[in-house]
Amino acid sequence: MADNYLEKKYDEVFGGRSSSKSPKWASLSTLLKRNRSYRGYDPRVEVTESQLLSIVSVNTRIASSRNLQRLRFHPVTQGDDAKTVLENIRMAAALKELNLPLPGTEPAAFIIVCSTCEENPEILIDLGISLQSMLLRAVDLGLGGLIIRSFNKEEIKRTLKPGLTPLAVLAIGKPAERIELVPVHEGDSLTYYRKDGIHCVPKLEIQDLLV
Image (tube, rainbow, N blue to C red; front, side, top):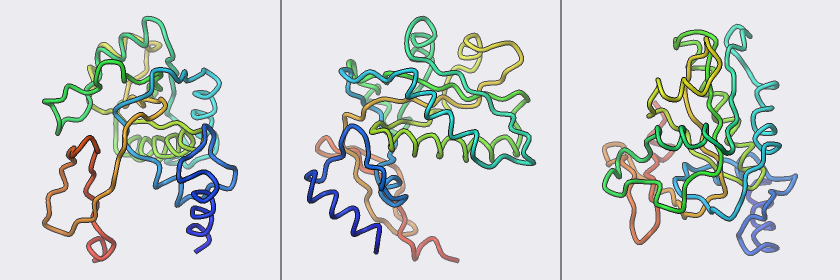
């Protein structure tokens, strides 16, 4: 109830649109609702190195399997590394015909998430915790992002220090597209799609998640 009250009051004051920086009282429910997989970004908004560092810094406070803390992070904002990343990532496998991102809506920055060891089940648990936590921080800063696991591993690896294994690329920028969640039930299609310029994401309702 508290979450809904805060969200409604925020919408009353700001007309249902977030400011460039989310309010300090933004609830977890609010952050989760705004944390979508964005594939189009506003090129007029620069993502700074300090913002990327703020996003990466959440990893100093989150859980890690056996507390081994084997994830490492390479922020990328511009230059050859940014070009390499952009040329070697793939977005929206279910919408191949759109060739996303559309020209002029490319991500402004990236965080390459890598590991000091080869990929394994424990690392993948750490990876999931880390990516979600970083995206929530990005939303808190008025930004958004996309988790990318489809990329040219060997080319991305060239941007890293020796001995590091790239696990994922986190695209970061100011979202420039509308995304809506569509309630569905068990057995319905879960493939995301676009309709009238809106990116629609089917999500199972709570009764379908309980077993």
